[in-house]
Amino acid sequence: MLRKLMKYEIKATARIIIPMQLALLIFSIINRLINPFSSLEKANSFNLQVFINAMSIFIYFALIVGVIAITLVIVIQRFYKNLLGDEGYLMFTLPVKVNQHLLSKLITAVFWMIVSGLSLIFSVLIISCRSGLSTELAELYKALKNMFGTTGLIGIGLYILIALTHGILVIYSSISLGHQVNNHKIIASFAAFCILYLITQIILAILLLLLAWSYGFLEIGAADLQFEPAMLYKILLPVSIVLILLGIGHFLLNNYVLKHRLNLE
Amino acid sequence: MTYILESENLTKEFNGITVLKNVNLKIPRGRIIGLLGPNGSGKTTFIKLCNALLTPTSGKLLINGKKPGVETKAVISYLPERSYLNDWMKVSEIIGFFRDFYEDFNAHKAYDMLKSLNLNPNDKLRNMSKGTKEKVQLILVMSREAQLYLLDEPIGGVDPAARDYILDTILRNYNEDATLILSTHLIADIEKILDEVIFLKEGQVVMQQTVDQIREESGKSIDSLFREVFKC
Image: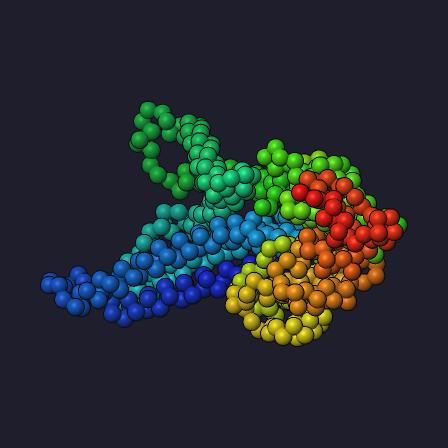
């Protein structure tokens, strides 16, 4: 059943996200061809060419913001509309477990976040392969690799993934909790999000303080400590574990609310 | 044999307002039952509780001997009073969706019904009128071979000519062992197909009787009895 749910979830989201990604790809290629970044640098007076270049850069960045925003909007909208709106009348009468609904939504959302991230990187690569940025990017990558090591980079990637998944689950919890209120469900969802965000930040702040204290960062003379990749793991690993635990908590909360406290209007 | 639907002191409150109050019902298999009552009498609430779209405040509800859940959802075919289909799919894609999720869904039946109502399976729901969408939903719901059909206002939004076809469709497409519960206030239109009626008034069951009983005892049609019971 999970596979079937995901099939429809991807179908429902791809029809909006894919065209957006394609638009970004096309504009990356256009930007590469007319190369507005370097011609703007060379330009010393305002003319039509400068205007076109500026416009194409503007549209490009608008698309980047658009891709990120659309992905986020779809994550929210698929949960709110498809499960708690009118379409929920169909979804919640399917012979499917609530956790399967949640998982299908969550996996698809994470999948699109990864795709969006990769397409942004890809788009930067397309543009940079002409203006000489690519060698600089390669150097940046090398420097990062030297600093963290390959496993370190994978670790950072995993951390980003965990943080993203946790973030999506916080959004789901906010919507589920907001929906428990009888009126002004959307405002209630925003309020729930703010509260959950605050609680998460407090937990993480306490954790970081504890870590800093236990590693001796708070002691006098700590400013002289040299950065080492090992320190990064010492911080990222516990933070990741806490985020995973919080994420599981949010998943269970959503599962409980949608199973035992569901009241569709 | 167990009842297809049983409720015991089923109560539902919203914001402190009691919408359903101590509803006790035992509904046998193989019946067509009219769930009748004026607006706000709790018909939709009752049906949504059966579909686990609402959580009861108190009381017990069993479908096929089980609490509402995945197993009961597999045997209930539910037509809500609103449009629950997304607007970007084609009718044929939605039929695929139903076939994927409901083992008892008969796609062949659905295509047959679409044809007799002159509906194109390649049309998108977005381009359909409200009445047409209702017809598509009814076709989907009646193409299942379920044990319990819960139809909430199935004829409310369609014209009288289509009403006859829909009632006919309902009668032709449900099997003898299944129970069909129809909620409506257009009683005259459905009176002739009912075996039994349940009258709901302000969230309480005021009567559950077979149509024959009513005719024998009071000599009245359901429609006139309804007007009498719910006189304003």
